[in-house]
Length: 408
Image 1 (tube, rainbow, N blue to C red):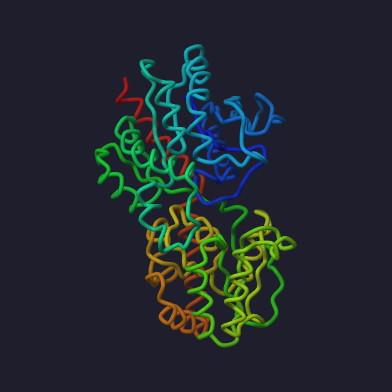
Image 2: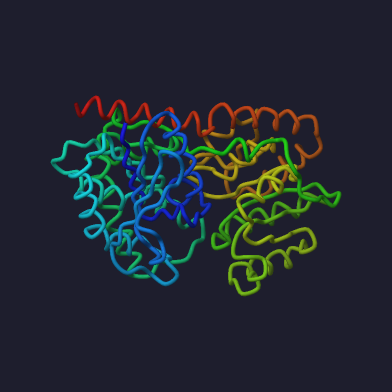
């Protein structure tokens, strides 16, 4: 099968390690490599966000990337939704020319602007388009006040409004829609996407890199909690800091934000550090800054518990990585967490913004090492059996097969 994977904002040659299909270039490469490993030809189409990027390159055996020059980009290649939306016509036209000359069997579009481009390029060519949003605008809008994020500027607000209008049409126009979690399935149905067109395929985790066996970051004798978060979403992190005041002796590693050396210049870090100081826990809160992808497994293995207080997490990437390393997870029942974390078996699900209850559950687990060990074993087993890229690739191919059969 010839697979065209349209990921307009992907940068696999300079990979990001975000959460989910829209920003996890390493995961995207893992998926394409597994698809090619099953005998398929994969071409990734991405925007040429950096003039130094080659027009074509090989990502892996059977996988190549083609960069399409769709116009100027923002400073330092930081491409926003508004930029991507404006570039859709210039991005889709070369796609159509390529597909006219060399027709793929199926097109897989990652995120909404890629879906617009793919549908425009494939019109009247008889090529089925599989759409994967990763995150829906309606869901992000619903959870934005609780996350405490920054208010959008007008250009970004206009793009967000366009997204809300267009995502339902994109979903209804695609041959199939891949949802990354069960909550997204419900939201897609409410947007008018036919339930029979939706398939739930979660985002995966590298279970070879993230595994219980391997190096562990240095410990200092304290019980260790770890959270990985966007520092701009301060409200959930402040709730975790309040919970820490009720867990005597434990330390909290906060992973995220700019590099450690640049933290002092980051407004969100400064406010969070002041919050920790006001709560009297500065000596127990460690802001690590950005941590490299290959350094995360050792850090996750060193933690007794990984705690998430996010209000919205479509893929639950860090929680999956922690589970794959055999570290139990405490998380809210939202997005990917609701599917990945089996409450009372691989971790605990707790409603967001309940610091007292969160602290109580943390204390209970820390006081029962054997229970944490059992949770960790079950978590690693679940990550391997349900979220390995081998399984995700197989399930993705099943969606392609169904879409191509219906098109035929």
